[in-house]
Length: 320
Ligand SMILES: Nc1ncnc2c1ncn2[C@@H]1O[C@H](COP(=O)(O)OP(=O)(O)OP(=O)(O)O)[C@@H](O)[C@H]1O
Ligand code: SF4
Ligand SMILES: [Mg+2]
Image 1: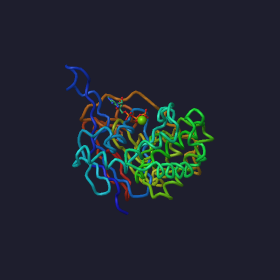
Image 2: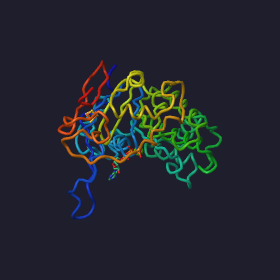
Image 3: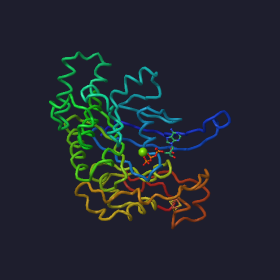
Image 4: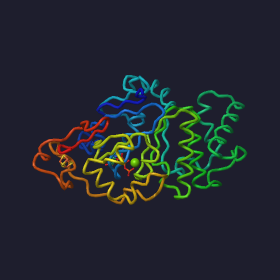
C-alpha cells in the first residue's frame, strides 16, 4: 500500500503574544510527530484534551502551518508550495469539526452554504444546483430541503450537511475532528456509518480524531495515541486493541469499559474522563514520567523515541 499522506518530524510551536512575549515559547503543541496514512484508509488519533490532536490536523492541512517538519500529500511536499498553490491544493483536503452549529452560517440557506466553494470555482448555477442536490442526497438529506436554514434541521442532519459541504470540492482526504462528539449517542452511529459508506463510495482517506476509543477502534485501520504533543504509540487498530503497550495507552484503555467489544460505536470509551494535570516539559525527560508507575531514573534523563516492537507496532518508551 502506498502512503497517501506522510508526516515527517512535524513540530508546531505557539509563541506568546505582545511585544515582550512574542519570542517566548508558550506551547509545544505538536512535538516531532511522524506518521503515514495509506490511501482509502482511516487513521484514528486519540488522546486527552489539549494533547495536540486538532493542532496536528490543522498543520497537516496547512490551515495553521507547522513550525517545522514535512507534510507529503499524494507525493507533493506541501511546504514547497506557494500560498496560492497551497490554496488550490487544499481543495483536496477538507476538515469537519465537531460542532455543526458553528460550522454553518445561520443566516444562509443550506444551498448557499454548499454553493460558496462551487461559486469560487466558477461552476455555473445549473451545475451547482445539480451538484448540491446530488451531495445532499448522498448524505441522506432530501434535496427538496435545500432552501431551508440550519435551524430547521436537527444536530445530526446539520452534521450531514457539513459533511456534504466538505465534499463539494471533491476532496480525497478528510480530517474529521471529533465529528460526532456533539451529537446524541443514537445519532452518532448513523453519522459514523454514513462517513464509512462515503469513504468507500468516494475512495476517501480519513484522519479521524476522537476521545472515544471504542469508536476509533471501530472506524480505524491504524491508531495513533498522542500524549502532550507526542505520538507515544502507533499500530494497526487490531494490534493496538489486542496489545496496547505504552503505559499511557494502557491507562487510557483501563478506563474504557468493555474495550474488547469492538462491535460498533459507543459512547462508553470517552477518555476525556482521565484528563489530568499535564507535566512540565523538561526536554531531557520522558513527558509521562511524573504519571508513570514504572518510571525509573533513566526515564528522567532522556526522551524516548518511537521504536518498532513488533511489525508496524511502534512505542515511545524505554521499558517496552
Ligand atoms: N492558536 C493557538 N495559540 C496558542 N496555543 C494554542 C493554539 N491552539 C492550540 N493551542 C494549544 O496547543 C495545545 C494543543 O491544543 P489542541 O487544540 O490541538 O488539543 P486537542 O488535543 O485537540 O484538545 P481537545 O481534545 O480539547 O480538542 C493546547 O495546549 C492548546 O492550548
Ligand atoms: S519511558 Fe519511562 S516514564 Fe516514560 S512511559 Fe516509559 S517507563 Fe514510563
Ligand atoms: Mg481538538
